Image (tube, rainbow, N blue to C red):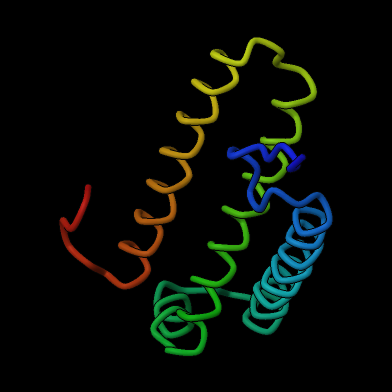
Amino acid sequence: MGSVRNITSYSGNGLRDWLVQRVSAIILAVYILTLVAFMICHQNLTYGDWSTLFSNLFFKIFTVIALFSLILHAWVGIWTVLTDYVKPTWLRGLIEIAVIISLIGYFIWGVEILWNIQGVLF
């Protein structure tokens, strides 16, 4: 007899979900520490300082990775809470769909802002 798999889990594997949470948290911590270090090194931040930082290709890629990590981290966390506390399957499914659509929209919006893409989606 095969095992039952929950299709709304990130990976269908608790260990993988746990690992995604930990790796994404580390990426987010490094990203935040990088931003804090930048702010410490530039006491009187100007728009030009921020523009220079975010126009750097390495930092743009790092920001996209951090944004994607945030989306994955949020999904695993929200999915865990929903499966623990929202028992009606139809309601949990409805909330999960709304969360997935929101997270995808936030990711696309963030990339659009970061790469200065005008009007691709929003």
